[in-house]
Image (cartoon, rainbow, N blue to C red):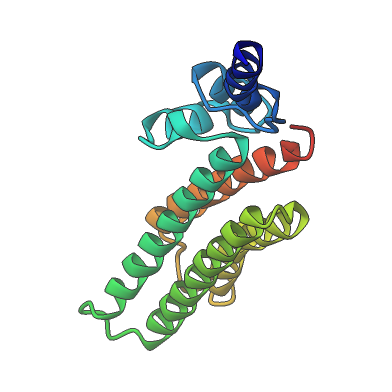
Amino acid sequence: MASKLFLLLLFLFLSPLLQPQPFVKADAKLIHKTCRKTKYYNLCYSSLKSDPTSPNADPKGLAVIMVQIGTANATATSSYLSSKLVGPSNDTVLNKVLKECSEKYSYAGEALQASVQDLANEEYDYAYMRVTAAADYPNACHNAFKRYPSLVYPPEIARRENGLKHICDVAMGIIDKLVWY
């Protein structure tokens, strides 16, 4: 009887260790290893280290964190552009372009949000595709300014464009490696 009880306790103790663990939790080493495989290591590392949920995240969770950072960036940029529409400008062409840009950044945010569900479903190819689309939406904004030679592409929008593209590049780098974990 004692040996059966011992075996049962041993099994209960060891069973969590015997179950497959496809992902490990994100400590500084995992964040470093993950970010090393991205195009913008410093952006990746500082973003993930500053997120309070990253210590409990696996590699897929790290991808979700980066996508959420991208979503916040796209949403903030869309709001920023919308706020410029209510300004003192009577320039209808500029307002038209700003509205178009605001919509494009909103679409980028929507694509990023949809990629979170793809990640949850482990549909990494779809998640990658949506993040790629999100990274491309700022190009449409930039091109809208190019259609009107009298308009100057504002440095603040250029800065935000590069920021979103870099965040998306980092997210794509992490998603690309998920199939190997």
